[in-house]
Length: 255
Ligand SMILES: NC(=O)c1ccc[n+]([C@@H]2O[C@H](COP(=O)([O-])OP(=O)(O)OC[C@H]3O[C@@H](n4cnc5c(N)ncnc54)[C@H](OP(=O)(O)O)[C@@H]3O)[C@@H](O)[C@H]2O)c1
Image 1 (cartoon, helix red, strand yellow):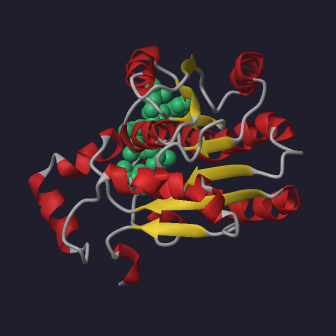
Image 2 (cartoon, protein in one colour):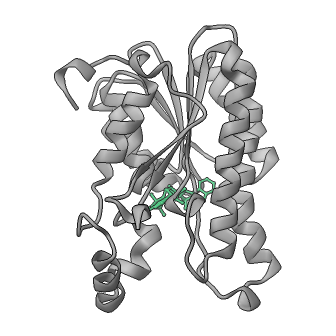
């Protein structure tokens, strides 16, 4: 973060889903470092509370809300709790996501639904709940964590690639809907970052070497790069960027 970023989001309230670890944690802490108050969401409370504690050391207000974003009743409960606490929300980061890697014929309907419901229906439910509390201010930011799989694909990722390509379409359509409100809606498409989600790859030396050999910059990404991009997209300076998707993938999708 540059010195100019310091406190540039002061007075803003940011809701981040999937904030208990990985990319969501990094984005939440960076938004907090930039001065935003935080509402942190994940299913398990333990990790969330730790992130919230860390955020408070940055001098910002931070609350954790255990909720499953794929469940409409959880999201409604979340809306009541967050609006009751903060009054409104300025920034939504729809980041919660899961991946199930299996060939099509081995994928159960339950697994298909779990991926689609978390990665695609979740952002829909969260936006539907909170957008009414974002309008009328002349500022608003929605970031959806898309993926290189919104743009390209690999075998055994049918559900994941479908959910992320769908999320990109959702991002574009919502950007058009909310442009009159000056609420920008963008995707951040991470390439490869060492998190719980990608453990099956980085923990397997052969799979890891194969992957790294296909990344032009020759390494895994740093979660703080995604976090800095999120802070920039939430800044006033990024107010003319909407309806797009920014790949941060070491060149992976250029080949
Ligand atoms: N890592 C990468 O290389 C990569 C690349 C491209 C895209 N992405 C995307 O980036 C996002 C974050 O991934 P990550 O790598 O940081 O994964 P991660 O470390 O596994 O973190 C996922 C986060 O989402 C939460 N979560 C999962 N299902 C949820 C649900 N139904 N409701 C609420 N929270 C839920 C998890 O907490 P609980 O389990 O406690 O709910 C956790 O906080 C995902 O959308 C992923 O698809 C990651």
